[in-house]
Length: 568
Image 1 (cartoon, one colour):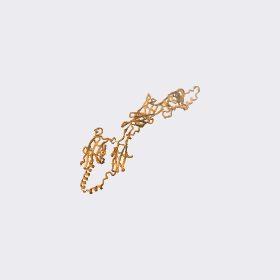
Image 2 (cartoon, helix red, strand yellow):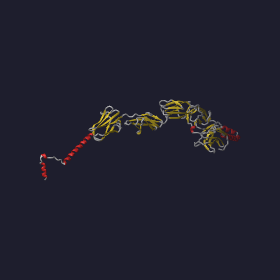
Image 3 (cartoon, one colour):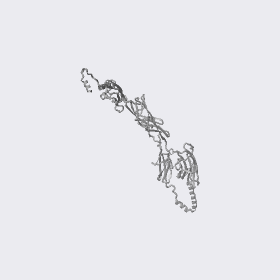
Image 4 (cartoon, one colour):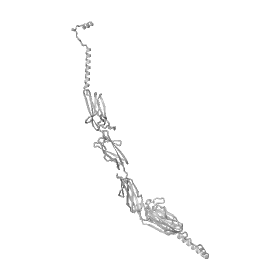
């Protein structure tokens, strides 16, 4: 039946034929139209959409000098839509560099750098530049401009209170200067501070003795750096003084002495507060008028920084011949072939006897054994003290070995043979004479005195001595001791020493037998001369005080002539 209906529809006459749209045809046609509409919308939307360009730079200042610090200008731009990018660099008058030209780039972030050179690769001069970024889509374009500043000049640095080589005498120093505001200050490899807006900066320094190297590095905002070096010499020691003349404790017999020496160049010298001229190499000389005795020379040197060095030198001025004391008088007659010459001169003097140098003790004493020829002998003693003053003394000594040997024993024997009755009286007379001679030979008169009753010992170099005067009537063996207040011997000056009959001067420095300084107190100096039974004893008191306490300087003496004293 359906086939019949179809058949009847297909073979209808044209006049009665009609066209019908089925549902499938409508769906297809609608889908195609919608797709075309979407394509047209998207296509024209992309053409009409803006690129959405955003651009910025990390910093405007840069220094393309290949020093590794801010050598390039880096920029970042962001696209929301695809676009053709053109990047150009302009100076104040023209375009100097084309970095990109119509470079199609996708949406997103993009990075670009500029090395500060023009289109030909030449480095552009310092100044302000514009970097223009243009984004071009199909129908729309956008442009952004960034400012760039080329600065290749290092910052200026000026130190206000220091030269390239500076000398100071204080360890504390505030180094001050000026530079570019906003720059970073580095000191000896470490960051110190950022320079203030007025450009001034200061660095407190703690210097060490000797040279100190200070390195300042200033880095400006463009990365340019300036470096300044300063060598600061800290000298807190005064100039060196080399005194050539006089020497320490020098003696002279010239009233005017010339002081010579050398100091560090460019220094000043004063001698006893009198300004002295110096040469370029620091040599100086100056004459000083001396007074008798000790003269203190105060030499002071000051360098250009104000450091001071001082030096003291003592000079002794003395004129006049030095004294010579001997144990034998001129014209003496001796029966021995050897003369034991003993004498005393000023301490520090030189002594020669008959042209031969003789050793002199610290107290000025000397002794020498001289062989004598029979007959007359001339002994010449010459002395030169520390100041150069000289003295000469001559002694004429006669050596007669036969003196006292002229008794004619044969004649005496003949007389006794002619008168035998004279034997007993002669023997008695001989015994009396021998006894008298023994008494005369051993009878000693002794006197003891000192030059001061109060004695203040000093150091060995100060030469403080107590002089003890010992007077003997004839040659005898003498013992001289210093006793304390309990009668105990503390110092033995002479022990059974044979001394001739004259005045002897024995110096004592206040030391005991162990070379120790005796403590203050009352002491007794006792002398014994001769031998029992004819022994004489004499003593004198001495008060020893400490330094700084003065006492009487009147000589004290006692005299005793004992012919038969068994006490010691």
